[in-house]
Length: 77
Image 1 (cartoon, rainbow, N blue to C red):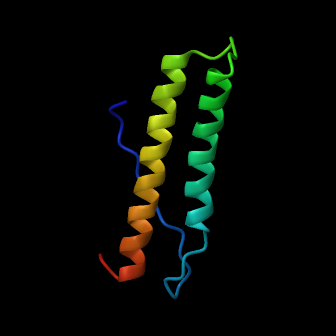
Image 2 (image 1 turned 30 degrees about the vertical axis):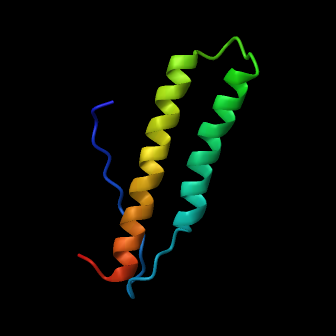
């Protein structure tokens, strides 16, 4: 996938994050892991290559959220 995803952080007027980013990251990784377990368990309706590609993209998105939040917390622009 070559598309770029912009990740706006939801902050209040004091700069406090309003989204539990760790929970979102964990959810994205959990969804991917669940898909992989279904494929490994023989789920016939899921294409293994597609699931692998989507799982990788979800992990990349989770990583970007984590990095953005770390930057926000450290005061980086």
